[in-house]
Image (cartoon, rainbow, N blue to C red; front, top):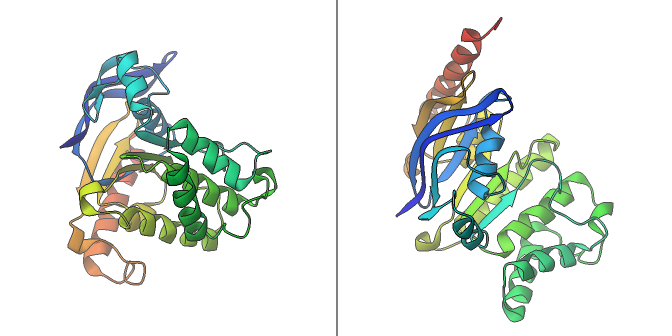
Length: 267
């Protein structure tokens, strides 16, 4: 079944063209990495899928719902979890770790017993079990992201949108959270596997986490390259930089990005 259908999607900020005539169809169950230079509309695309920005031109259907229609956006709001860019932007700094996750789950209508059980599992999985009562405003950057990840997974959404979830973290914390997210993504049953879209500037991160990579080019923003990675060829951290096929994928992604950047130097 289709998770996402985009047809001739265009979006502007004033005179600036953020997305230009974008068309794309993706089945459910994929983990999609969006990469490309700054300003090519990656965050805009996620915001449009999340329904937090209005469609200006073109069509966008998520899980069969028409995101141009307010009623469909409202109906889908409980089926999409959205982590915007920035450490813990979805968190309330005066609420505790537990309260933040619980409040989010309440908004999505989870029954009390299910909330408690799911939050307990996620606190354990994210390493936050010792800190349920700590205000999130007093957490480190890495712990804030752990809480934001737990918050997103608490509602068990069929669509998960993550805008540079590891971008502002040190290398060690980034690697730990990448492994955590992989574990959470893959812990569900195949029939209930989430459709995940995440934005990154890191080609290696995209190869590690995604099974479908989309490269957006600049001026005008458009899809310039797509890479589907079969499950048996998915990168593993321990072999990512020695496997010849993974190295070849990496080199081609970098070549596509650099070629697009070079075409626009001096514009």
